[in-house]
Length: 112
Image (cartoon, rainbow, N blue to C red; front, side, top):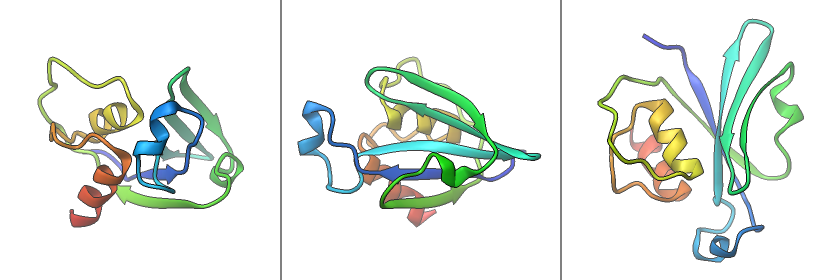
């Protein structure tokens, strides 16, 4: 159905709730390879990012973890958390309501 996408997990200390998340894995966003470039899709507290770059390393800074995943179709839920994890789960087709943090999403992806 879909081609492989990459999920990038980074640290993020700019929000008040960051102190409650696992250190080093506080934010996530997607990278989708397309011919000659990459589509970047991410949600932060203040903005929604959707743009293309020619080099995926040009937007990734510092320490990060990258996982690959092939998105699948799933039923769309009536409600979705408006967070980086909520948006990422929706694009990936993950319908698990108990995945709330980037670390939980990373653990889920590693099990798949």
